[in-house]
Length: 136
Length: 222
Ligand code: HEM
Ligand code: HEM
Ligand code: HEM
Image (cartoon, rainbow over all chains, first blue to last red; front, top):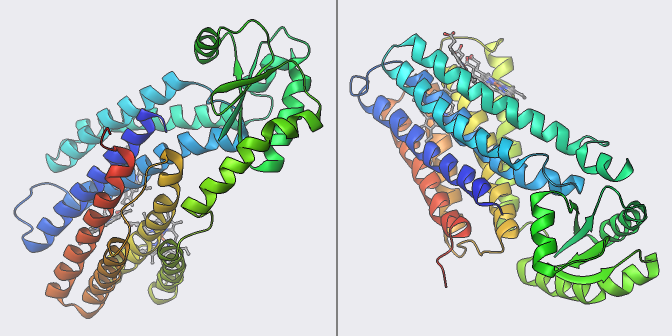
């Protein structure tokens, strides 16, 4: 398993533990963490824990199911950087009531989503680069 | 074990070889990939193997043949790998283990319970206590349990590293069930302490899962 994909799954676990922890702190005393904590928690869990687990596993398994190499390793590397640059900004924005930070983080996070989507489509699509090269 | 076929775009026989090997790999359940010699991965392989000819066939990273094989020849070349894969499968278990089967089954039960929220709430968006309760029946009961069952099954197979078994998966499962049920019942019954206890138990279950899969992802160098 590629190191980047193992990083995705490992970082997802860290986000899962972190997201659970801030939810518990909020339940015990809502004044301890400032900002929109439920929203931050929800996105740490969905974008950090669930989506990054899916990223790591899908990047490994989908090319293998298709029998083609991943369309682009670089795109997947940038997906890792963008996803992990964007989410902390979004969290900081929600906890600090700074909508501009949420937006900036959201753009980066969305960039990762698009890179992933394109990479997967180009990998799985019959007639994609993997196949086209030998048919030409 | 992985079958790789090194090809180049300008080679007329490569397509034929790809057909034979794709079919053979699919028939016998091997991973198959085509590596282009002009790509960095392909060039690195060719250099390592001192390769002069394409198509070239690698089984488990070792050069086994060049040129185009008939389906019968392909089968013969695959025999040792099939034997090895068979032995490995028995060691690792191909089907879901009992703990992972129970995680997946429980996920489906929680999904159906979460669905009842539609009937009880009448809509997805409400602001009463049923919102976090049914939301987490879905996110914890279904999504988290699916990840537990599927990731514990797949990650050891992707990496070839063992996952912590024994009592650990059952501890993780017990904590998760008590946690989700405590959390959900806590909201529905308006019992704050129960919500907190459920939240903490769920978190401990996630911590247990992390403890189990970490050495799968990052094994200690022997
Ligand atoms: C350790 C486990 C977890 C605990 C203790 C926990 C706790 C909480 C709490 C206390 C809230 C606020 C409820 C409210 O007052 O409205 C909440 C909201 C939420 N949680 Fe969780 N949760 C956990 C896991 C998860 C997971 C795994 C996911 C997603 C996969 C998730 C997704 C959400 C979402 C989407 C919200 C709503 C956020 C919003 O209203 O904007 N949670 N959670
Ligand atoms: C680029 C990625 C994303 C961005 C920038 C983003 C941004 C936002 C923003 C700004 C809100 C607040 C909306 C409001 O004020 O009413 C929100 C709410 C929410 N988002 Fe996201 N989000 C992203 C991805 C996701 C994903 C992937 C999921 C689920 C898998 C998700 C689930 C939710 C939920 C459940 C809410 C709460 C809705 C509510 O409480 O009514 N988001 N998101
Ligand atoms: C059988 C299918 C499903 C049922 C019955 C169901 C039911 C519910 C219910 C009852 C709620 C609480 C609504 C409220 O705020 O009162 C909810 C919220 C939510 N569901 Fe589902 N759900 C289903 C499928 C899904 C799927 C497939 C996803 C995403 C992958 C999802 C994501 C969410 C999210 C993120 C929220 C929180 C929205 C918010 O914070 O306002 N649900 N769902």
